[in-house]
Length: 313
Image (cartoon, rainbow, N blue to C red; front, side, top):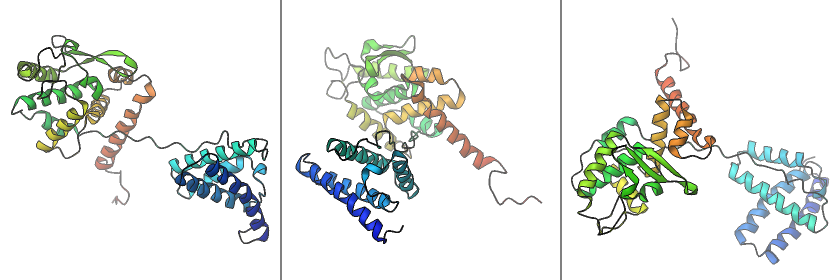
């Protein structure tokens, strides 16, 4: 059947009657926003057109296989995972309403799932670029503090909140360790390399020129109080711009770089998981994908037979 067939047009009309009633319910009872109603009208209307063209004259005759076929059709047409997820949610809600109205006995969309969004690989900083930025000499007290922050982030792989909340009592320079409180209020000890320890020693030598009496925070602002997370991020970006880093710099990018650079020279994923404070190994495994992407780029750039079109005489 084609969309112009009278049967298809009749099927679409019958499917549309139920859909119109549902949209009225969204407007009159659920008080849904204009944006939500428009999105449901567009998504469910397109589904009705597709189903009508395949011989469905009632929503109750649709099976989950039909809905999966429709999602696959939309996916092949270029629909993004977020759009497909919204469509699946709209179909589930629509059928839930139909069951309450006695228009359907089952909800074929209950187990309907859209394709997962592809994992976004974390951004990192080139080792040489990062070394150049960290080797820059501070010119005043605030820059001495900022360099200590940068070294600590990269050396420990800590989160922004973990570093911002550090107190003087949380660091052990002799042991080269810091005690941080991570997600779920879980405590862990993170290592501080010699560069980070040296930068912290220089900062602690001048910290009291800024710190207000009784302030326990490791990193303080020019006003003498604990340095806020927003200020930490802003100062890091300022340092990067001042020293020619070609990419945006923020605390989490240093954390990503810490993990990636470790895995480039070590395959001990469990150790990196512990250092980052990840509850699940699956969270850490994204860095193995990133490392593989790095290796692929090296291969493509360096291997003599990595590119098509090479003539072998």
